[in-house]
Length: 179
Figure (cartoon, rainbow, N blue to C red):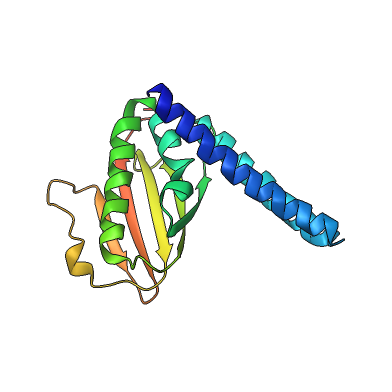
């Protein structure tokens, strides 16, 4: 990663934290302490998930996901890491590329003027020896026809319901020490 990219990432990150602190400050000045507690609990949960993300030893995925909301103005993703004891460094690049591809597909069927909220969930499926990432996005979407997954990307699926779309990425992965 180049110095400029690192600085941009830090700038996005700092901007988001300052926005969050301004909200807490505003609630404090209005005497709405229950709202302050609510927001702080939300931020603490977010930072805990961020810690889990960083502990995956997947720098590409972390550097893509942490500034995601700042870079994509009409997407707001939260994320949940279901297993803290993973070292997925050996599939980091592939997983990140696959997730980026999912977002590209989602961008094709979303509307520029709408704000979409979603969640990314990463978990290890022990019985299947797979890392699975599920991206769920809520909102209204144009036709799914434009977001076809190429045949060579068999590990990615798109499913649409009435008001949300799920893009699932699965990659074979053996946890070190497991047979």
